[in-house]
Length: 348
Ligand SMILES: *[C@@H]1O[C@H](CO)[C@@H](O)[C@H](O)[C@H]1NC(C)=O
Ligand SMILES: *[C@@H]1O[C@H](CO)[C@@H](O)[C@H](O)[C@H]1NC(C)=O
Ligand SMILES: *[C@@H]1O[C@H](CO)[C@@H](O)[C@H](O)[C@H]1NC(C)=O
Ligand SMILES: *[C@@H]1O[C@H](CO)[C@@H](O)[C@H](O)[C@H]1NC(C)=O
Ligand SMILES: *[C@@H]1O[C@H](CO)[C@@H](O)[C@H](O)[C@H]1NC(C)=O
Image 1: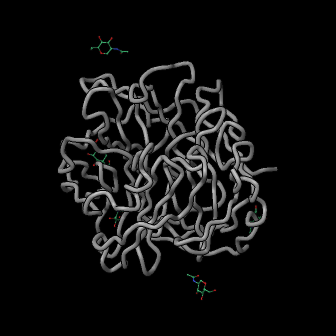
Image 2 (image 1 turned 90 degrees about the vertical axis):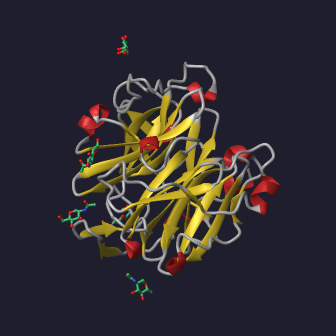
């Protein structure tokens, strides 16, 4: 728990500059200064499993991007029977229509059946290809020239030749999960978690992506696995400024800690990084209507920039997350996870 005490110093260190930037979407003026504390409002659960032959218990791990007025969501579906985890795609033009968006189960595409979970979608501009990053026992990717064609995803290809030795070494008691790719101008970086207190990072030159991922190194670690569990997101918040989010397990439920760095390779400085003062968690979320979940769990910032740099604004952040009715007690893969939307509000 040591690092929990080291929170304040870096919180206000990010430069106060406004940059003009944009890829595909309209140029936008943006504030690149992250606040030192966060507050959110949450909707009720908006997206549920369909009542169809798939008999899914939970919808989880959403990755979301807004392209030309359409929100594209990739998510995991969970159930008890094998394969316990699969991928689903849907789209909508406004959140009031999110719950009725038809599902396309991606095992019908080249991704095929088998264990696949925790997707991240992004557009890799140098190759004019969409990438879907996910876990399949290894870290895998699938590509598609057209995000509007959900059956157009290629067969999965693994990033690594088996489980890297350093991950295997720390794995007993954990699981290797939640892969995430972000690129700077020179390299693409692949993050993953071990559900055991460690965040790993590999890199490859941008020109070689997706081949050539290096042996992972430890990007961040905690003595207690609950303080650095899984579901990392790394975003660019401006020129040489990055935001790292990692899901942790607290007293109330799941919550996110945050860190910043001037380099994707770190070192990372704590920003809002305790359960009492989290990036997102029960302590700083106000629900519209009844509180339907105590966990603020795996999800993604809604990105509107469309390339491998994963740039986001530092104000007015919207985060699509998974939550669950705390009264339900069942097998983990049978939990009724649903998706809700957080909107950042200014800390007045
Ligand atoms: C950017 O955000 C910071 C922190 O909230 C605030 O102090 C500053 O005034 C904002 N700048 C602009 C130009 O909006
Ligand atoms: C789900 O579909 C089945 C079969 O059509 C139907 O019997 C059942 O009532 C439906 N349940 C709900 C909650 O809509
Ligand atoms: C978005 O719209 C622009 C302009 O019509 C088009 O060039 C681009 O291909 C569209 N992007 C996607 C992903 O459909
Ligand atoms: C949305 O999803 C449907 C499949 O449900 C797909 O046919 C369509 O191309 C997707 N994209 C848009 C922009 O509607
Ligand atoms: C980023 O900052 C560096 C150093 O201040 C500057 O040279 C460069 O032009 C900036 N890049 C952008 C895209 O603003």
